[in-house]
Amino acid sequence: MNKKKVIFSDETLRDGQQSIWAMKMTYGMFDAVVEEMDQVGFDYIDLPMNGIMFKNFVRFFKEDPWKLANLFKRKITKTKKSTVILDCLDLLGEPESRSMIKLFHEVMAEANGIDRFYSMSNTRNELDRSWPWLIPIARDIGAEVIPCICYYPSPRTTDEYYVNLTKRLLEYKPDQLMLKDAGGLLSVDRIRTLLPAIQKVAKGVPIELHTHGMSTYQGLTVVEAMKLGVDGVHTCVPPLAFGSSHVSVFNAMHNAKVLGLETNIENVEALNVIEERLTRIAKLENLPIGTPLAYDHSVYAHQVPGGVISNLENQLGQLGLSGKKDEVLEEVVQIIEDLGHPIMITPGSQFIISQATINVATGERYKEVIDGLIETALGVWGWEDAGVPWMKPNLKDRLLSHPNAKIIAKKYERKNEIQAEEGSVDMIRKSYGMTNASDEDFLLYHLMKGDTEIKKIEPPKTYYTGKEPLALLLKELSKDHEINRLQMQKGNSFFEFRQK
Image: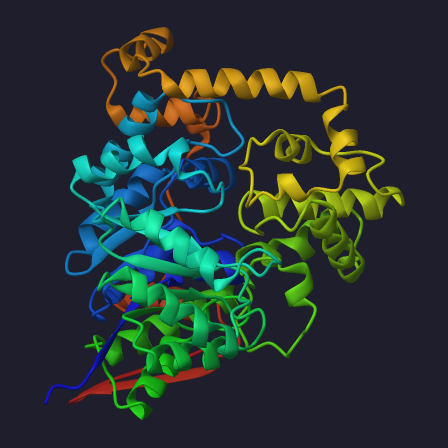
């Protein structure tokens, strides 16, 4: 009799580095481990490839995102590659026609070799907005489609709520379903009722679990999910596991073995190499190393996602609000209640944190309000899951009567009109004088609103991996002043390195 099997997928290169390193992973860091990542046996590897990330690579790292996309395609040849599909190129940018959104995903998928797209289902609640035209884009590309069932605790999100949501998602004939717990808020008790309820209506469609470590129940929740027959689990390789990130692949493998389950992991040595290289890079670049968190009951109140909390302390320091984290998180709890318990996931979670920071900085609640909250009240970011029907009336009136409300409402109406248009890519190309430019150059110019930042792109920094010539090894060793002496021997050949 064959053993039951649980399938592991990797989040190290996308959500792991977002949660622990605040998206500071550069081309050279990816290049140091991506080939080994392909040898592990993961079901798929999640990659940071969307319009927002493209902009970040150019703006903050001065790196060419198309070069990174090509790296993934060249060096990940055995494992499926996955990324998110969005109905926009930039969540907070200018509106785009469907033709531009379609072109970006087609070109990006080709450059990357993408096999799977996942899409948030209930961040906006109304699937009718974009799924009827967005999902066919993924299908036309030839990619699999994985809808995300985004979990968050609220007075409304009962098991029945998620059963009904799952039924709606099944109408799109998904290849898999992802139970996405961005806040790490699933508990053992909750998954014992929630997962079986979803499994019952999923009718054999595979379900994978994506859960962060904010509540510290992550390990227990993953074990319980495996007991209940979840088909897949998202994992990370240390040092980008633990903390607010995902469960360590080593820990998940151990617990699967204890439960008598087989896994798809084929090459543990490759995992060891990845861990060693990423740890060395973390120490070299003074980046955090993920460690298990102490239990903090407040995470169930503020619900800040694991991929967002990593940026909060840095941003507070930049604003001169160091030491105000607890105060800001307490304000987040109040804003969640004021807004009618909206889902805490991008971009709503960022809006709420920004408003909480302003409230703390000014010393007065809603003395100044960000446009994101006004957009929320207008229904730009959804209706039920955005909490609009349950928003406190006095706050809703304050937001809708704000001087910016009419401007934002008109912009939103125009956005819907533009997005509904097929648009003309050729006209946009012509307006840039890029009729004969490659799709990659044209799209990057469009994303960056010109070539000012593109001209600043530099060759990426590389990191020593052990495959380089001896001369490079000596150069790297000389940078580490903790190494005084190193001896190597192979057969009759002997080498000794010393430094003061």
